Length: 357
Image 1 (cartoon, rainbow, N blue to C red):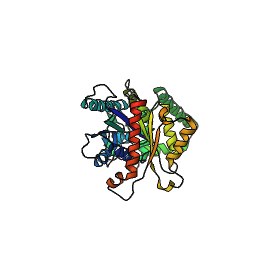
Image 2: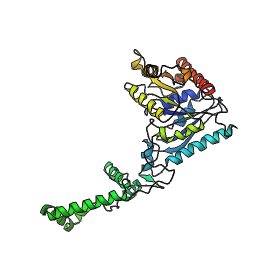
Image 3: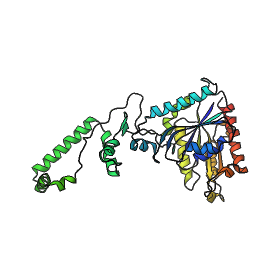
Image 4: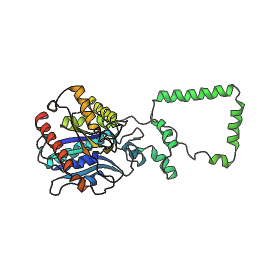
């Protein structure tokens, strides 16, 4: 089962749309490990899939909040470690291989393709956060106390709870104590009188203070093999390379997108990813001078001076869909779109059978 991980140089660059176009070329499996908000990408892909294909589409972890997964997991109180996320992707790939009768052979059937679409950009995190470990989110303390979500101030105050070691905590405490002692010995009468007046004031003054102040607690250390930090998805999914998974990068076709795309290319290469193809939604405003795919081809020409047979990514672009259209069936049926997606599918077949055999 041929498998491609779909990365993006940013959010909103067309990962789902180009993936949907690819699924129209042959039988496919589509996996969305992390979905945040709606509409669901699975629904979009299946809506435009050709009838008759033996295909499947699955969301592994669905968050209702339309924000980054590592924030959604905090606010919704649903911790998800990097190890658990990676394991769920591997389990789904193994299930699909067994369903196709492939056993442990990762390269058995090139006629059935699996696309795993990541969330955001190559350096966007998964769903893990240092604030969200061992089954409970720190944020739930604030949410439970007032029934509302934490405000920005509360969020950043809580950020300090899980960082630093005990020595830094104690040194900070002793520093604070020493500072307080020094201030007292220097005769800071205003500070003393202000503190005294607050302690002797009535209920009105007390109501301005939080009803309960949980003491800062040091976050538990991650279990062996568990990652709870900010792990870029390019690194998080890196173990999938051992399973024969290759990558496709969807670059940023907008003005200013050349730099973001090259940064993404170098991020993936530095982590050992084989990039089979780099695609763009062509910006109509750049049609006179050529879209960003032209610049990326120049980048590879000047950098490697190699042809496609040596493994340089296949660079392509397809036109942007009309913004005002809700139904894109006519768009996917355009001759230009079908031709370019067909060329890409043939190139991926060639690479799979010849370069990755």
